[in-house]
Structure formats: C-alpha cells, structure tokens
Image (cartoon, rainbow, N blue to C red; front, side, top):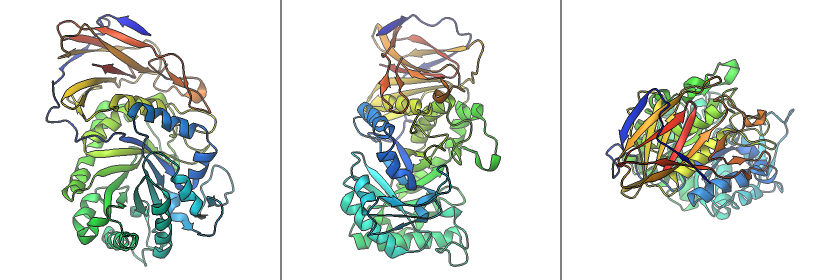
Length: 474
C-alpha cells in the first residue's frame, strides 16, 4: 500500500543536498553483508536461544532483509567468570540470588558450543583470560572450532582494561603493556595449538585511547597471523551507580558525529596490519542502559550511530543483550519488544545489498542525509531529523534532494513513534512503514504502508517530523 505525498510545503526550514551519482570520496569502506549484529552476555546465551522465542525470530527478520543473518558475539563480563567443564551435561551451570543478577562464577560444557553451532550466521565466542587458566581456554577453543561451523573468531578475555592488580592474570600489577604481552602470548598459544591462523578477535578494550587497538596492533609482531579482527567496546553514556543519562543528547546527530570520530584511529591501526576493526560490544548506556535505553529515541540513535561507526571504519557492530528481565537496552525480552529493535530493523533494510554509505550533510546540525550505494549507483537515501520531540505540535523539516534522475516518483518508508520517549512495553509502539513487531514473539505485524513522493526535474522535497527517520528507495 502506498500513500501519495506531494512535495512538502509545511516545514519552515530546509536542507538542500545533491545525491552523487557514484560513491563520493567520503564514502565508507566496503560494507559487509550484515554489518549490524548482536552481542549476547555469556551466561544468558543458552536461555536467549532456548527460552526466549523472540531471539530467533528477531534475528531472522533482519536476515530476511539483508540476505545474511546478523553476526552474533557471545561474551561479556561473565565470560571472564566462566570455566569450561568437559564433563558438564548442561549448556551452562550457575546460581544467583535473584534472576536479575549475573553470576559471579559459572561453568559451561561442550553442549554450549553445540548450541552456538546451530546458529546460521557467523559467531564470535569469548573465553576467559582473567583467571589465567590458558589450558582451560585452549580446551574450550578446541570444542568451539569443532562444533561452531560458522565460527568467526574467539576472544581471549573481556575488557582487560578493567582487570585489576588482584586479577589472577595480573600477577600483582596490571597495565596495557602487561596486557599486550599477555594477549600476544595467548594468541600464539591458542592459535598454534588449534593449528589456525586468523582466529582471534584481539583487543576487546572499553577505554581507548588509554587502552587501545592503536597501541596493541603495532606490537602484535608474529602473533598477528593469529588475529582475525580487533574489537573495541563503546557506550556513549553511563547508567552505572545512579549516573544520569540524557536521551536528547544520545539521539542528537551532531553529538553522534562527534562521538564516533574516535573509532577512525582504531580502525586505521587495525587496517595497517590487514585486519578489520569491529565494535564488539556497544549500546546506548552502560550497566544495562538506564531509562533512555528502551525508548524510540534509542532506536533513532542506533540508525545514526551505526552509519557513523561504519563511516569511521568499523566493519560491524554488535549491540549488547544483557541479563534477561533486567536489560533496558535489549532489543527484545521474554515478554516484550524493545523499541530500539525498530532502529536495527531499519538499518538492516537500509543496508540490504549495499556496498558503501556516504554522509551528504555536514554533520553540524540536527538533520542527517545518507546515500547508500550498490556498486557505483545510489539505491537508497536515509533522512534523519534528530530534533527531540516528546509532545505537543510536532515540527517537521524539509529535505530538498536533487540528483534523483529521470523518474516521476520515489518510494519512502517512515520510522516513527508517538514521541522520542515512546516505549513499546508501555504501549507507545513504533512503526516502520506501518509494520510493527509483536511482544513475546517478534512476529511482524501490520500492513506495510509506503509513501510515494513526487520527483520533478530530478528533485524532490521530503518532510520528516521531529524524532523521525525516512528510508527512500531510489
């Protein structure tokens, strides 16, 4: 179903851009088939795959758009609390005082890797380094290699910049210099024992530039042959210890552009030794996300943030899913959908079959324009109005786009919700071109309702409301 929309005339301000006929010089590197993925906290993985019905459906929905399932990374804080037990008959074993807690210690068995091997997309899995049991990690790695058919990489430890002098791996003191020695030694030991090169996802740092791929990569030396990729973790805001978060800042286009610039240094350092740089764990705010994270504004942040990270040189992003039932930034849970999933689904639709993306605005206002290319021709545009809308009269912004060619009209699909603060678990359901996703199942709901925008002389005007995004098919 398509509604015909004439050139917008109600907006009081406008941004004019011309779409380059081929990828401009500021375009991203070559995109992966599915550059947006999911990181799943280590201790929760079995339950996400076996107990939460939405997991497989949500991932399949995105895969249907991309033609490739989203990559998953299994890891997080609890990977460095986990010990492999070859005799364990269950996937994982731990005890917690409350279901909202993460375990302080856990074990996992061979069937854990068997389960990971059932996923049709590629899998990165993280094992323990903090406890300094190299033989145990090698034993787990052997099983992972044999049972995970789509294994992309193995991580050796999670966020070593947060280890302390009392961590068993530290031996009484800890620094990035000691971590580099440890990482490269473990890479060589694991890789050589497995008889595999390009198998380790290195770095896994949270705090560049203090702890950074830019420091590690030049010192890899002979161990570089075992490195598949370098990983960084990133959260723009913190919800830890009662820290305040701000949704308006999170979804601001100028703030997103500014924040993601730091990834370029890391990506360049990785590419210098022939490796990709990934955001191996990211989301809106640390410690589960806080009040900003389950909102529609966070969905819009995912769109703009993903595009900017790709432009900065990251090859893929894994958005973290934490403790089931205690995770504000999660895209889905056991009983309800998270509004941010709509942003991820929008990204998958926008980048389906794409080779490159380019930003056409200057990054200095609330209004973003992206051109998406397949080969040498533009196939889609994304228009984003990051003005913060929470109620009252909803302002609109006019995007005047030239260079659309000799066509009479183009099709557009709108990502919208009642407000930036809308949450699906509170009835404020977002929609993407009229489509939604059902709580508890992630099944698609509704009927797709595209919009047809008139083109005249290769030019059209698109109206995008505050806290909305529009995907235009060329």
